[in-house]
Image (cartoon, rainbow, N blue to C red):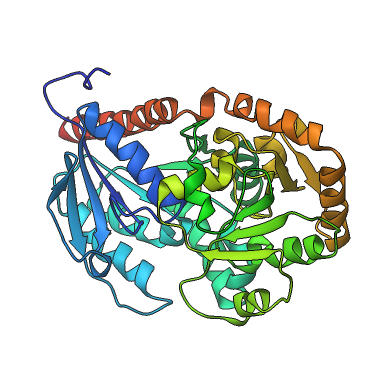
Length: 386
């Protein structure tokens, strides 16, 4: 790839995640994949990191400059206070563009607007609908998402359905830039043997054990089926709660809870050697776990949502089930009876990774947005000087 044209490097700051190279969820994966590619293309990139999460704090990793900012360490304030401090620091720096992730950071666009720093924000999913944000949390997210549309210069969504929703709800035009995938066909059987698993003898769920990912629905539907295969649940929550505790207490030998899997080769192998992958995520747009399932050649069984239909091309690359335990049970029974259909879905899954899901294409699109924002700032300065 060629460096961006011109003698002056484009300077971009990214904030709103846990940091780099920390990989925990979708946003951190975005920062890693996008950031490394931007750096190789000549962008002067700075990533804001949550200071408390990093024992070692190198100033530069893989050419990316890292800035460690503090936060008020409580469950409800950590992310917001970290983003607030990071935004202030970025606005007082010489960066050309500030890229923010998470609609919860919507109000901080007021700060960048005051300092006249060009901004873009990836607003991601429908946070205000997630069960964990009921009450004040839901009201905050709907307000913060509205603030994002008013105070950031460029709104980015990761799917066409999210673009439509933001247009209808907030009357704002946004740019669609999906997440990327890293497809692979090779796994390591030894990586799954530690759990007593064999190729093709288990179904897989990957995601945080929170209500909006519907792990309880998937588990309930599965245990009511006559499946002889296991159900492997990868993921956890960073704190103990009744939801995950109740799931783990279900007395069924077919259930296997691995907790977090931090080794990427272990996680990849769990995907690749599964009989089928269950996707119960409900409120997001382009979901990174689904992209992994496509890229690793999984037979996908997904909750029937507009977002999942968009990603699976309306059923071309997976089966759908309704949000009912009996529908999950029926889906499992059908999958058990049709191994050839599961094999076909596995063989054709990677065809679902159309061009928009390639990280190089994603990087091209973000770079165009950042360069346009920098250029708009130059034009504004010229107008003010005349």
